[in-house]
Length: 126
Image (tube, rainbow, N blue to C red; front, side, top):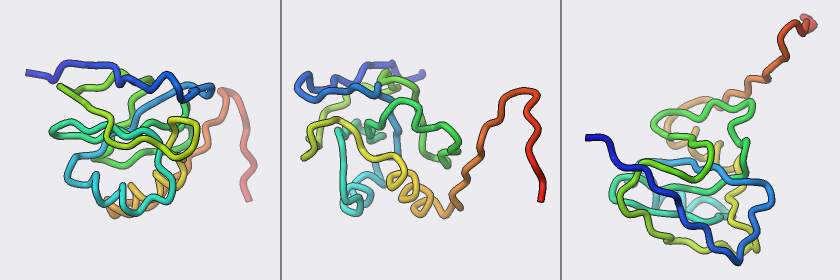
């Protein structure tokens, strides 16, 4: 049976003017990431996954490594996620690039930036 999908309830006092997406990591990695990230936004925990709020579009040109899960929006597969970290900054966001690099390090994956080109665009080769 697939887990139900629930919306992560962002605090109304934290403006999310950039939109919100969520990045999930298995719960077993949550404490390690929390301890090492210098800045953290809203973090939600469930039995199996921890969900980090990032600005919408934080997957643009990035391939988030497995087992991380990138979700557009804040409706995630979870049972009872609860807010476990309130950010010190006045926004709900975890900075996506440092978080991405930490997830890559944790998974032993080389960071991969893959610029997307518009159809019909010719790229110069050196």
